[in-house]
Image (cartoon, rainbow, N blue to C red):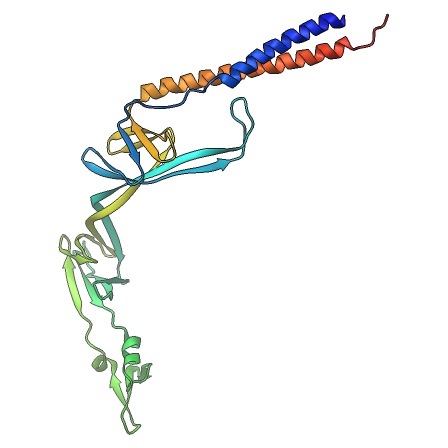
Length: 294
């Protein structure tokens, strides 16, 4: 192959490759955006959906990854934007299950009680909360009493020291106060840790309680991901590091996503032309400088 002809073809392929590269360099990738989103919010802002108030608790933007490459380029970290919204359900339902003959702590003074179901061959309907006397604490608070009880002939006693060094044995039932107790029945309501609580069910082995109280719920926001608030589903989009938009215009999002995908397909095609033209030009130059056999 004549070198002059090879030079012409090389120049032609270089021109084509350069033209394709210039298109890549000057092309602008389309992005997702909504002209009139349902909500445009920043961190700390509140908004309402179906009468429920929501709060944008966080908006974050962090560099993540370092893995595989994207369209027409190499791998590396990428900016990931996310957020969270929270809301308070003022009448959330809570339940608790108390096993028979176990202890629970309740009240302003954190008193410990033992749960005792009134056993029945049929379906029990009542249970008792009997105060658990802290014998150790009472003995430690009494400077005249030993810190431990003693047993004599099968009976337990408290050892009381008088001022003369003499010890007196006092039966535990006389020394310790009588434990208080309260009886409750199914469907009865009482105060449990500041909540009006209903005895929902009594069984031989357990007691079920139910009450309503405020509860804070949260929902994660991911960029271009769906979030359901109440009965409404929105597309979350972060146009920058400080703002999130919520939109129900899913058709617009679908159309914009198709435009972006088409753009990347075109860019990948142009990169293919650049690579092909460069490879052919290099091959032609190499062939042009091959030694002639004649």
